[in-house]
Amino acid sequence: MTTPKDTKNFGALMDRTLKIIKQNYLQAFREAGVDITTEQWVLLDRLMIADGISQTELASDSFKNAPTVSRIIELLRQKGLIKKKQSSDDKRQFLIFLTEEGRTLHSRALPRVLALRSQGWHGLDDVDYGHFVRIMSQIEKNFSEPD
Picture 1 (cartoon, rainbow, N blue to C red):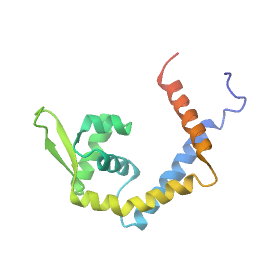
Picture 2 (picture 1 turned 90 degrees about the vertical axis):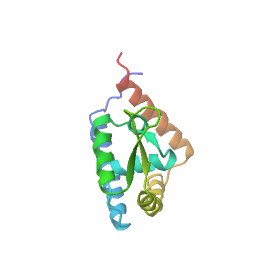
Picture 3 (picture 1 turned 45 degrees about the horizontal axis):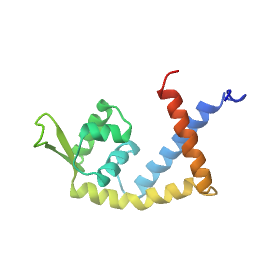
């Protein structure tokens, strides 16, 4: 396919949309009395699915680089939301676990997160979602794989 004629707003539209989404998440977290960022939420949410994974797995699963994940993990640890335990298989590796406080915070924030997801898809259907995933996946591939 050739490039669409009007691509000048592509980056601005993506950037603006992500900023609005993040602002809404931060507002929802504040309203729920939850002191976390969207980046911290991504890791907490992932740990609810796969508690006790390595920092490397957490970085890969959340599409974040290792230094960023390391920084976020330290902030979450300081807040008492996660704990690190040395792996019994590899003493150089630490596994990340949610604390009870982390689970409670996740439970408190989750209804607002689900409401925001629903709000974001208002007026759209499963076909739209399929198109969105296909398009975003292709754009990601285009930028990830050099010609």
